[in-house]
Length: 386
Image 1: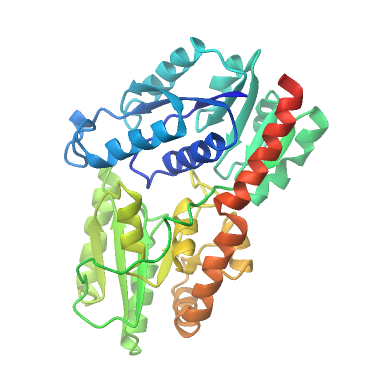
Image 2: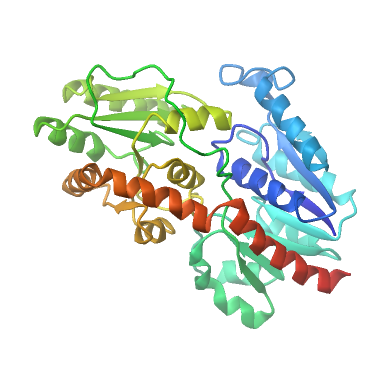
């Protein structure tokens, strides 16, 4: 079976949800099908050299190109910066795709209305990776694609599509459990005190992702005698984020938390970099207030669970499902008392939570488990297109 994968980003850095998911799908499909073609874009890194080295010389990118060769995938790269020229990126990707022959078009991260004209005569799979709003216009557009893959258990919201001939398949992201396993922490010590519980936050520095109540909760815990530390790892990609970064730094000083809370501006390009970071911590903090543009489930959370970090998370999307499986505790990120109690709960039961976290990924999100689901879908498609 020949499969064409279309994605706006399937290249490092791997802290991009679309990039990580696309790479995960590539690995799964490469082990199950005869021929794969990937059409994706890479950023014009000459314009943002402060974040990355040149794509031609950086070992991270060279390793990825070698990985693609091992998969025996034909790859077409479109040069553009999707962060600042998104519409141009989409246009170029679509133009590149129109010149290629394929039996199955697997779409990851391209707006649905853009790819609908490409779905004929090919069999078309559209992957929903974010929390979508349940409204009539969306259902109308979705009904024009015959095969939809959901990464979240929340796909049940769209079961009415099955009455319109749409086939729904739940296929969660696959985590490489051979890579995402705890290793020895070799990073420098970020904190000026002994930490009994090391908390990690990785994500955007925005008020709707990292509310100020987190710092107030840390202040309460420190005042009560808990030796708890928090590292915030993020990139600054907008003026809004830069302004909020300054506000956080001022509040850290006002609360006297300089020994316990650090913010590190860093781009995590490689698996190794992320594993090294996760391995130096005990708990992951994931606190979006809204699910807007949030991948579901978040790959950051799954990777951390695989390394043994339970999560303290907002009750959004599959985060509720992961908590029910025993992977952590749910919290109201706008209620500092809720944050305090959740951190105390993880602190007191850390070892048990950590063991459960690893088992959750092994049992539900490993390649061994996820690839079986993908194979079932391909077998079904094979009966249609052959």
